[in-house]
Image 1 (cartoon, rainbow, N blue to C red):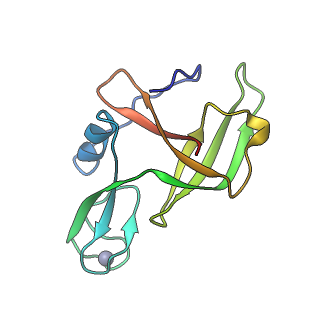
Image 2 (cartoon, rainbow, N blue to C red):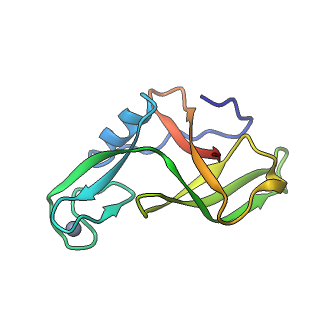
Image 3 (cartoon, rainbow, N blue to C red):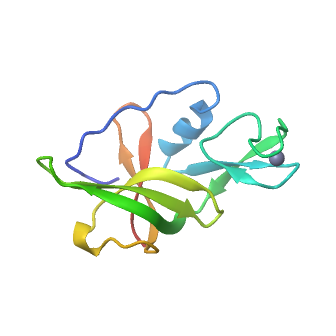
Length: 130
Ligand SMILES: [Zn+2]
């Protein structure tokens, strides 16, 4: 778990995402894969967004990927980085890049998941340099 001085929001949890957020509290990043078309998707949904099948399964992701694009928020007391990270499974998540010198962040940089505890039995899947 990372100690980052940024504002942590407790995520909105519904029936479709409850399993995902429970797993984050155990340090696991889950993604959904469709058993019919084999596509991964994120955020987790009951219905596959590619073929509309409800035959979707939870898979544990190793949590490794690359920075697709990013933006550094500087006009705040503690600057931070918002990014889109593409996991090795091919899905892209909006997240934060933490525990790195913001000047070293680059598109295509290899990253890995780093969970930040929300204090509410779940954690935010942020990323740091791999
Ligand atoms: Zn599908």
